Image (tube, rainbow, N blue to C red; front, top):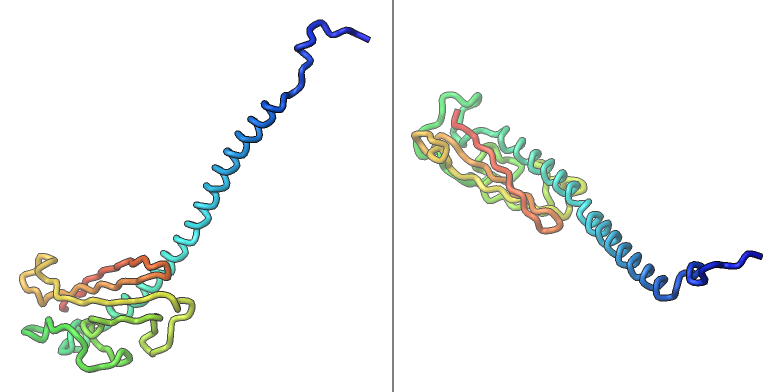
Length: 171
């Protein structure tokens, strides 16, 4: 048997060194797990935002497909002039009969619905509000009645509101 020249060189790991290692590893694991947890809780955000964009696009497509004003002829020409060009609000119609852009002003639906009255599938916790206003001068046009702004606000289940705005010209 060979004798050890330096008895201190054969030491093992002490209890204190072991405890310090455990504490350092514990702190590192807690930091890693909390980082993963935070990113996991935010991973649903892009899905909700995507659904909000799709819903807003559906409403915008529906609204922009309507006439500029009640008096706008089929085809949009000639443009409507006078006070009727910038009248805002429903003309007494229900949602299923909306036929011009300003009819949608004040629309507030939760859950969102198709124009036919059926609820939009998988959007039960969403809310849609619409505001329409005359905006010709805001766009630099001579007459305020030459354009309308349409603001569709989608409120998601986590109470975040996204507003999408489009303009419709009097043509």
